[in-house]
Image: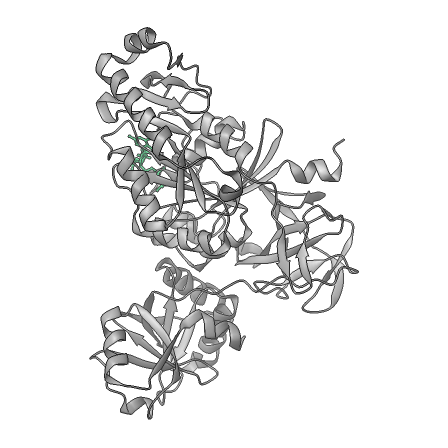
Length: 535
Ligand code: G4P
C-alpha cells in the first residue's frame, strides 16, 4: 500500500494543447497504448464518422462525431498515475478549453514541424503562460518535410518569449528523416518506418562518438551535418535549468513522429521525469500544499446533460490536496452545506466509473443537482479555504439570437440565462430593444450548436440566429458623453450586460483604435477583467 505522500507524488496531470491537425489525438493515442489503456490506435476520438469516440457523452457529440467536452483520460505508466486533460481544437474550441488548463499542472504543446506555431497554439500557450505552468514542446511529423529545426526553436523563443532546450535533435526530415539524436544519452535513435503502430520501439541506438557506425547507419553527409549541428546546439542553446522549466520559462523540446510512434516513448519518459507532481494552488488564505492530508478541490467545469435520460449535470473537480473518500462528507464552501459528493466518477479511457477514492492531482466528476458553479471550493469541513476565481475569457464570435415563438418568451429567457450562468455563453441586450433579440458571444463557434441543442431539448425553444462579423468586445469604463454620441466605425455595436453595464463590440482591432482616437476620454477595458470584478 502506498502512503498518501507516495500516491500524490506519482500523479502527473497535464493538458495537451495544439492547433487542429498537429497530431494531438495521435500522440494521445500513443500515450494510451503505452499505458495499456487502449489496445489499438484509432480509438481516442471519433473523427467525422470513423472509430469509436471515447468521450461521446452528449448526444451532440455522437451526432457530429467530435468531442465537445474536454475529456479527462487517465492511465498508469511505469509507476506514474497519469491524468491527461484533452483540450479540443478548432470548431469544438470553447471557453471550456481554456478552463481545462486551470486544472493542469503542465502542458504538452504539439507543433506540426512543417507549420510551426499556429493560431490555436498561440491562444492556448497564452493561458498556460498566464498560469506559469511548465510547457513541453513536441515537434511532430518529422517524417514529412519540415522546417529547419533551428528556425522552429527560434520561432518558439521569439514569439513566446521563452527559452528552449532541445532534449533531442532531428536528423533530417521527410524522406531523408533518419532519426533523432538524444542529447542526454549522446546517442542516435534510428528511424524505421516499420515501427508504425507498434507498441514498443526497439530502435537501433548508436553512440555519436562512434563515427564509423554512425556513418554506416545514416550516411556520410548526414553524420557530418549532425555532428556540426550538435556542436552548434551545445554552444548556443540554453542550459537545462529545471527551475526555469517548472516556472514555464524554458520549454524542453522534442522532435518525433506520433503517427510512426517514433520518439514518443522517449518523450513520455523524459516528460514524466521532468514535469512536476501536483502543484500548489493559491487560495484566499494562502497556498494549499497538495500533500496536505486534508481534502480540497475546485470546480473547473460543469457539463450538463451528459446522460440525456437522466438530465444530469456533472461538476468536474480538480483535487488540490489530500485524499478524497467516497464515504466522507465535505463542505461546499459557497453554500455552506456539508454533504457527501454524489456519484463520484472518473474516466478510465473508454468508460466512466464510480470511484471510492482519489488523490491530489486527480480529476473527478460528481453529480451536480444544480448547486455548483465554476470556481467553487469543496473541502474538508475544518479547512476553510477558497480557491481563486477561474478567469473568464473574452468571446470572439457574436450572433443575434431572436426568439421565434412569442409565447415562449419566458422559457427563452430562462434557458439563455441559465446557460449563460454556467459560463458556456455570454448574453447581452441591445439598449432599448427588449429581450426578444439578444446578442450572444462565444469563445468557440461550437458553443452555438451546443446552445441550440440545449435550448431545444431542455427548454423546448427554437430561435433564429444571425452570425455577426464582430470579433472583439470591450467594457466602456468611461465615456466623454453618452454612448450614442460616440464617433464609432460603421458596424460597431453598443450592447449592455444584464446588469446594465455598457459594452462595445467591434469588427476589428482597427475599429477599436479608431474609437479611442476619435473620442478622447473614452476608456475601454478588456472584457474579462471588469467581468471578474463585477462577479
Ligand atoms: P489533432 O488531434 O491535433 O487534430 O491531429 P490528429 O492526431 O488527428 O492528426 C491529424 C492528421 O495528421 C492525421 O491525418 C494524422 O494521421 C496525421 N499525423 C499525426 N501525426 C503524424 C506524424 O507524425 N506524421 C504524419 N505524416 N502524419 C501525422 P489525417 O489523414 O487527417 O487523419 P487520419 O485519417 O489519419 O486519422
